[in-house]
Amino acid sequence: MSLLTVEGVVSGYGEMQVLRGVSLRVDPGEIVSIVGPNGAGKSTVMKLIFGLLKPWEGRVTFDGEDISGLPPEQIVRRGLCYVPQVDNVFPSLTVEENLEMGAYILDEPLKARKERVYELFPRLAERRHQRAGKMSGGERQMVAMGRALMLDPKLLMLDEPSAGLAPLLVDLIFDKVAEINRTGVAVLMVEQNAKRSLELAHRGYVLATGRNQVEGPGAQLLADPEVARLYLGG
Amino acid sequence: MVEVRPLPRSRALRRTVSTVLGSRWALVGLLALIALLIVVLSSLQGVSATRMLGLVVRGVLLGGVLALGALGVTLVFGVLKMANFAHGDLMTVGAYLGLVVMSLLPRGAPLLGLGFGYEFVVALLVAMPLVGLLAYGLDRVTFRRLRQRRSAPVMMAMAALGVAFGLRSIVYMVFGADFAFYYQGRARPVVELFAGVRVRTDQLFILGLAVLLIVLVYLLLERTKVGKAMRAMADNPDLARISGIPTERVVFWTWLIAGALAGAGGMLYGLDVQLRPEMGWWLLLPLFASVILGTIGNVYGALLGAFTMGIVWQVSTAFVNPAYGPAAAFVVMILALLVRPQGLMGGGR
Image (cartoon, rainbow over all chains, first blue to last red; front, side):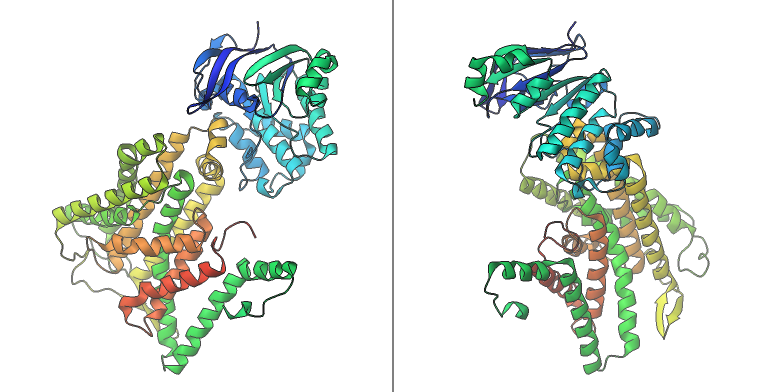
């Protein structure tokens, strides 16, 4: 059974329709990448899955339950965590406090969970008492991912995790995504860096003009000359 | 600002100059300059050093009361992005609620060298949570509806102004327009602090309690889960929701704390001066000035701002009619904001 399914979702902001029928699924343990040109609605799909936007049509199910239109605070309880593309840390809170906020809904000591994040990102362990707002873009991305991992999600959603990062850091972030995935966490990510993310992904979707157009294993999409020509900029 | 006159030719230099002028230290320097000016003026006018010191002490006392109000204003602004113009009147309500509680209790003897008895402390403990709950109740019936409809900030501010008028009218109706006192005609013990500066013991209690409450708020924000969540919401409300923080519960605690501080501030102000239905209303502008001076939404800025405003307000009375005290404080605020528009603790630059 699929972990997450999105079926024929139509939605948008106010009067403006952005999604014109998107369907996708994520199976347990998979990395799924959504690629496509700017304005295709990639980030909008993520927001919709996470309840920041209500579907006009269609539905979203997670772990067999309908979660369409549930508010984010209820969605996180089901094991789905989300890292937005921008503004994804609390700048005046320390690294440690950022992580604590990720597990706010738990009434238990968070030490073990924090240590696990620090193991994954040793850089954060060194700077646990630094304010997140004073950190570099790459470090902030680590804080944001760490925050989202605090609840041990079944599915981690990443919106453009490599946006605006130096090439070396892009490598690091993609390595970390693979490492997280190896622990059994399914990953759904949206990426501008189509080549890198499709290489990493088990499957990919190409989204354009609010619809998913092509779907398939990451490597196959990369090799498809039509996909390359249409959406990946050659 | 005289320093700007030699216009730098290159843009880089100009940027450096504007960075220096806009830095926190420039503002601190400006405030120090004003302090120096006051000292010079006072010696020219023959105001005694003792009198000046006394005014500074009074300013710190007033700053403590202002800080209690300003903390609430800045917390509500940070978490809810709303200018709560009803905050001053919450202080008034707190002061009068205290009066009601005290009238229900038998009068006790003055506590160790102070001018009030146990009943004032009891009233404080009752009024604080009550004003907190009142603040949250008002949010439920007014501001929350506007928030959910994503109303413009100006609508929220107008709603708060309406609540302010409403609260004040109720106080007028119930208690009348006359002054009221917690203790009429009772001796208020005075002690000498240092160098001939004399204050009432009650005033020391007021400052002590204000500092205690400020420390408690600090610990709450830095150490407790709900306090950290309040800071998180002030930072980034969307991310707070995405993280699963129950935002409505954080809103409840914000109002409870802001209201309780307002209640305490009102009662302490009433103890120091007297009770009037518009007492809090007249504090509203100094409160906002403190908060803006210290960067709105920033808790530590609000404290700095409040004590600065309190001291300027009191010290200015040595040179101008005391009625202009708040005006002097505003002049300082305007000067400070010209130098550093984002306030003392603001980011950027």
